[in-house]
Length: 181
Image (cartoon, rainbow, N blue to C red; front, side, top):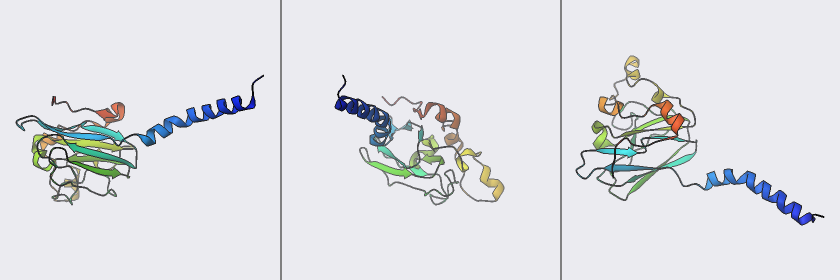
């Protein structure tokens, strides 16, 4: 005969087993994006370069080498074109030295394109999808020209460095194609 306490323990264990995946997700550390550079500063990049997160998640950037920034593509940031959801708050970090970090909590669903101010022309850009892709980050890079906006366009070198939205949706994390080892 099975004692009542064994049944309760078994049932409680099943309940814990069902809740553990959700609890594990909430305990997980925020996604981290590293800001890399080779020794000479000739090759720079974010790693990963593409990331899929849920609304409300905090993303953290860590400067591993050289000096970098992280800024949302937004007119508030040096008149750059809008490449984040229209209702999202733009961000920009100070210049980060090796070992320093910067974090942002992304609450509005959509595509967020961002760049490193001193290295944008070198293609140091990244893309985060929060929830489902939507917003200006899903549009062609020159969409705003037709609206008569005088925003600064994304440099061609940077345009080629963004991972595709479909690739991010499939892979969830798209590592940098550059080797910084």
